[in-house]
Structures are given as structure tokens and as C-alpha cells.
Image (cartoon, rainbow, N blue to C red; front, side):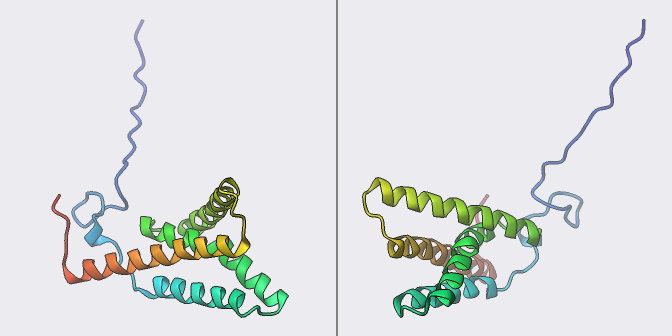
Length: 149
């Protein structure tokens, strides 16, 4: 009786699409990103914090804050991963925003420091920190700083 060989399944687990030499794309072959997304995150953070501090009328504040909390903190963190597909980055960002919101709320409850303003400040701080890291990383990349691998 002869055995039938099953075809071998090979999966390339590279870091992205093939580069110019056929291998996985390295960091220098990723598309150049502009700092606009990080700057937009910082501006949105300032706008939302001011909506709350200035006690803007309910509907405008509610839509702005809820939209911000559902998208911006996680999207700022997801951009640090550099997912090549924009839609995937957005989906991961929204999921991460919701997860961060739950973690911040649970932390405040555990510490007996529940406050909506404190939660917003924590999530705004996370988003701003991620945006500043992105700006700093991109600035160092454009200046020619490289890791020694």
C-alpha cells in the first residue's frame, strides 16, 4: 500500500508585504507617514477637554466626548503598531479605545476614585502620550536615527 503525501502548507509570517528584494518589508520600506494624524489627535484632545472644562451645552459635549472616547485613545495607540491597512488600524483602534475605557473605569472603581472627569483626563493623557511618542519616533526616523540590530 502506498501512502499519499499531503501537500505542505507554508505560511509567510513576515512583517508585511514583500520588499524590493523579495523579503519582508523592513521599517525603511514602509510608506512615509505624515505627522498629521498625531497632530489631529493632540488637537482633538484639547478640544474635548475644553468642551468639558467650559461646560458646553449637553448635546454638543455628549457627542464630542463620546465620539472621542470611542475612537481617539485606541486609534492613537494602534497607530504605534504601524498596521499597513487603514481600515484594520481603525477597527483595532476602536476596539482598543473601548478596552482602555473599561480598564480606566475599573481602575477608578477599584481605587474608590470614580469621576467622569478623571476618566476623561486619563484617556486623554493616554491618547496625548501615544501621539507624542508617534511624533517623536517619526522625527527620529526622519533625522536618520536607527536601532542597532
